[in-house]
Image 1 (cartoon, rainbow over the protein chains, first blue to last red):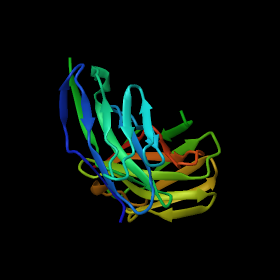
Image 2 (tube, one colour):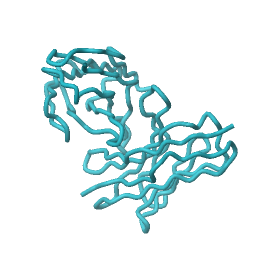
Image 3 (cartoon, rainbow over the protein chains, first blue to last red):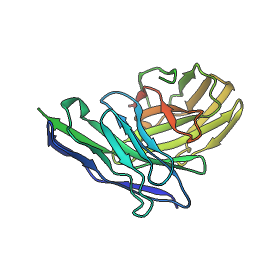
Length: 110
Length: 113
């Protein structure tokens, strides 16, 4: 079946550090891939997406590339800020159903 | 902003009482969803709707019912609340882009004592 696996958290980094949150997926065919972010006390917000192999999604300094050969969609940011502290969810959509990873909590220290 | 509101935002209720949560959207989206979010489980789909009076079950539908009598409103009812239904509930709509991404409301925190 379809599934999403993302790295366990929490991840703690200092401000201006490089961020990578790993996400791999299992799916038939070519799912669309997403990263969502959830700030404390809020709902999930769509951060970026990619709909086909080798697509790169980007937003607010975050990037992720759809890698079909490694079934991965890792989230990266070159220089994190305290305001990036949140929970990040990787997700895929296949056959009209969205499947989420369990989320990775990110703490950025000033 | 997909124009989604949820009410109430917080509720405390007693075991055995009925509870209804409301999701309201202003942009005429056809698909609407109810999820619950619990530590260690991520988001789990409860029910979804693909049009007025058209609904279907998700992976954790036991103990919940839904209704959609108007495009803009999707109601989630706990017929007899239990402590295991203490959770944060999110409503979502499906966007109209071809990739079917979903947009979420702000959530309702429900505590069943």
